[in-house]
Image (tube, rainbow, N blue to C red; front, side, top):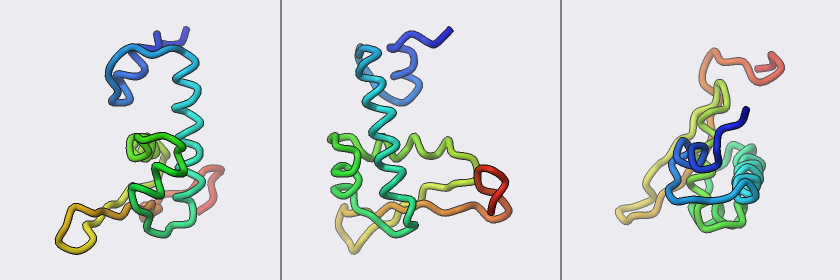
Length: 100
């Protein structure tokens, strides 16, 4: 039996009460962010939000931490509060389907 929507959202770091329909959108947002990040290049928060098609794209990015063998990396750009994010395959971790 699936978790009630409120518990699922809380587990993903969200707050408040949303519906099952909202959860479907969150899953799609994470998929869109995954497609963007799959190139291994660095992307800004604005690029990630645009890919997610929602203002909380970096939250969708954090969901990608659940992918086995993948690490979400982040680095500050310059002295300000601008960051870039990218994905890396962890050393010694096979990809899905047993591929490296």
